[in-house]
Length: 411
Image (tube, rainbow, N blue to C red; front, side):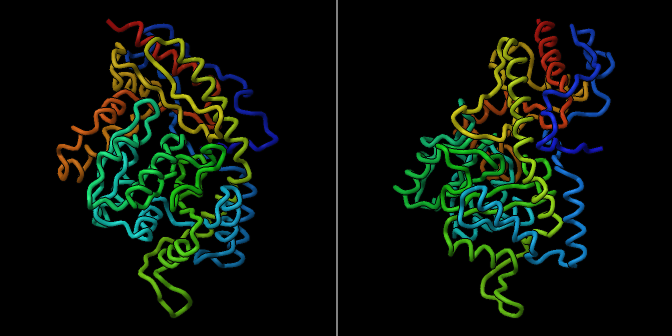
């Protein structure tokens, strides 16, 4: 059963009473060595937030009464207006999902030839290019931030390069100013994959207004979700107009097609979930913030492990708790993940092994990894841990106990 997100008047997640839990004091207490698991119901990374159930059902009943289920209905229009105001942008073009939003933004910007992006990202960023016969060129990351390294981007520019896609990984903004300067000097289009970064800021401005366009995912696992969905944000009127045509087969009215297009429309029921979740964002942020703080405190006592910090000067959604192992940590990353899974803690190896090691890119560019040493290194040492308002309050201590027990038992 999916539990409801806390409403603004509910107590924050960190105030919930702790559940009775199995204590893990040593190797013999670990499920991977035969002990009972800590959690009967698995704990997921990115468990969906669903807001106020009654609010959602009320909107669902309204759209059913109207019998306007898709085709730019009133709920989609309201969601676009509210998102534009929230993000401080002129245009929000809602889409059926984040991948189609990427594809439409890429085509609307006229990208072709080669486009530079990180390999350390969800594979959809690269697939959206490859799907349109554009060559993704993978640049390395900054090992301190896991975001695209501007110096690496500059090294990958060729006469065929037409654009750069920066990724705001983990909800931490990419080096926007440096990438914008590179794009300006080389006359390249700059856009951003902001799938992780809804609600985050860069120098006090909300992500969404940078580059020529930014693309959001509203997938069920994201901090802000519409069941399934996405959007492109831009301050360019002509670009927004073109993308509105493109998401609806190029139709200008009932019978007039004026632009190449596809079907990228968001249904009304998805907009209803988006409007519902917009109302509870502050409570979700506070729950995520509390969990991130507790993880940092619990894991900081384990030598050789750090939790990737957020910039205290910027806003964030705190959705991703990213633990990074030192290179000489005595327990392999995969063994830690296996032990956590045995306890019912479904930690993840994002974004292992990097897009350049996935098909078709591995076959097309077999030597790409030679230019991506930081990507290869970071991808092998990262563990993403469960969080979110539904996470049991004491699960974080169990995560720390599992990793501590493994470390202490290591040769």
